[in-house]
Image (cartoon, helix red, strand yellow):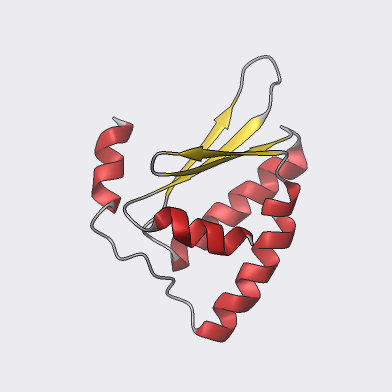
Length: 108
């Protein structure tokens, strides 16, 4: 099923809908609050996975991030994975060609 979802985003352009100034401000905010809180990063074939502690503040941070990013970056596929037995929380950002480079720019 996730393969079908991924195919739907492959044709979307890899471009943020925010104006340049707002995009730069958002990128700085996201890099510090979201990606700065990641405990581990793994490269995927079509994006990246970021590991977080599975506490309430991380869940809130990530759901707010996904809600905001869906508005300006509709080309992303977002996945939140809660590992069993109170394990870590994973955010996967995936998409079509060029999405990995876009994510790299976001996290630097």
